Length: 242
Image 1: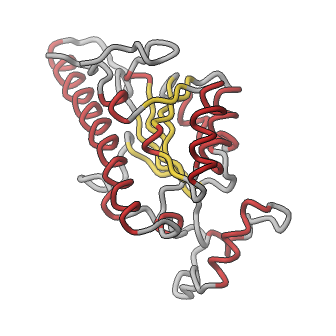
Image 2: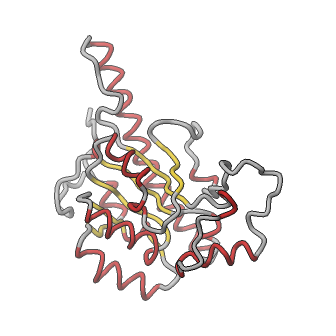
């Protein structure tokens, strides 16, 4: 087991969220198939780790409640997993501004025939396009692994995300996703401004431009985040060692 030595401040897992930003099929499809497969395997390792810690937290809380009459918080000592993704098709993608150059690729996807399912008449049923392999084993709908739609590249522009993080008293955010230049850079910068401890596993982010990816991870992001490896996160002390 490793220590917190590679992190700016000690990481308390019970106050930590895994923020999975824009890991969606349409975005992944921009990368070669072998890169997609390898990337999803690395993401899965992080999901498995956080899911295991969440289970430990629930098991511990159940044992505590059985042995004590004192009330326990719904979220005591429990990490959080957030899939923060574009709600493709929501209100016919009316959230995509013609003045936002970064969002122009959504228009290009529309031109290719995506989001044309006319059987979906409810504007509140967007296509989240999360790869099936990433779905929770017990299915969606729990309090500890959630989906939040976002309509800007940077995650922390969303008041919904902030509400969930504050409700759980989250202090540390492990930010992963696509792309490094897009949602990761934008989310990391604003999240740091909001005083969250942002952790970026370099092998759990990807960009279309490898040179830009390497430059951001080596020269820019370390100025205000902890850029580490997936293994560094997996080596954090478990919530419950017994």
